[in-house]
Image (cartoon, rainbow over all chains, first blue to last red; front, top):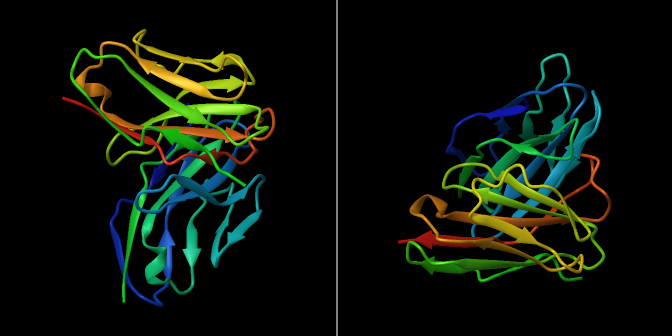
Length: 111
Length: 116
């Protein structure tokens, strides 16, 4: 079956540091890949997505590239801000419409 | 416009009580999903509606869980005879079209259920 593995958190960074959150997946066929963000007290929001291999999703300075050869979709940002502190979920949707989420990675950014 | 709303935001129930959780999707959205999110985990799929039709309920953990969307808009997730293991955040999400796996889902803030 489908599965998503994310790096464990929390990830703690200083403001303006470079961010990478690793995500790898297992799926049959050609899934679509997503990153969602959950701010404290709020629901999940779609951050970015990629629907085919080599696509790059980007939004709010975050980027992730769909790498079929390594089955990865790592999230990156060049310079994080305190306001980026949240929980980030990697997810895939492949074959059926039922999405599979990773466990989430908490990001804490200090001033 | 308004996003997905859920009510109540918090619910405390005594073990054995029945609870009903409401989801108001974005107007016009065809697809509606329910998820269960345990502490420190990602959302786990429960059930999926396309308009009023419940097309998939394979994620419902037991027959104590029941969901409906009678008019194709508002949905209710009902849990009968609640147990402590039902304690979780219940998330609702909607999407505009019939879901083929690429469509963006819009999530509500969730209902945090605590069963004592």
